[in-house]
Length: 179
Image (tube, rainbow, N blue to C red):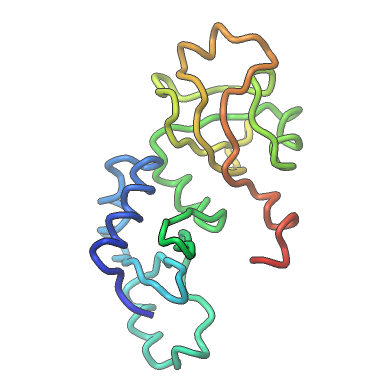
């Protein structure tokens, strides 16, 4: 487990900025428990600093993971957020979309959010902005990218896509072998 290189930090922060905006600073420099980012086997972890110091006693080959996995670097060197970071994103997200109970299962099966399934959306959400998808009872279901802005969503027909699905909690079941 090692600290991220400058180029890696830039990629991670650019991806996180899409979802949490300026809250990245609050995410890393927490007053209650300071956190840091660490890389282990091409996976980026969000770890409490005291836990990270204790992990130095474990051999690198024996360590499976530590803290919350935010994402991983692909073989081509690009950073991809994984579903494990959902609870961190939902705490600091700038924009959120709430899905009606009737559309939750469709979303959890990997489908996009349609206008007919849209419950609420954060005011002034721009198009192609990273959002966290929530149930009407404020349970985070996944994250994605808006296809339209808030103003455009009001004029859409019910079968139009509002949010593109990037990751959802149903992924745990669909990709169980890979995780």
